[in-house]
Length: 190
Image (cartoon, rainbow, N blue to C red; front, side):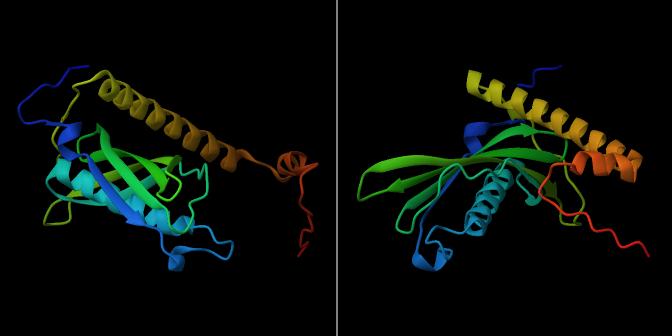
């Protein structure tokens, strides 16, 4: 693999983006916690801003991976989303986002989740356009780039495995897998 240090590339630090927003009561669900959808919307916004800064182009979301809410976010907390380009392909970018919630009254800070958003850069004609290479300037940059490659490979293998499984399952095999699960099989025999 060629190490790219071209002057046409951009450093991860050049496009790092942080969005901070106060969590207000209208963002809360019936349990009084912040809706996951509010956080997903903020994740998408910060990913767009970060990817577009790196690409110098309009970017669209292709996938959002690893959204696992580790801790709830409360009304009144300040949520900061820190976005960094972790990997670039020819037209795609993987943006890593770390979400932090801060209770300003208590002075406490908690990491609520980390997500990875794949974006594609688009030109004026709505066709994908090439993005600048990512210049890796730290051990962290190198680790994040390598992890993104590994996650991409694991995702590809997972999709292939599921596709093969879906195409080869017989009803009896599926019923064996369901044995002992919390479901009731009541097949319509028509």
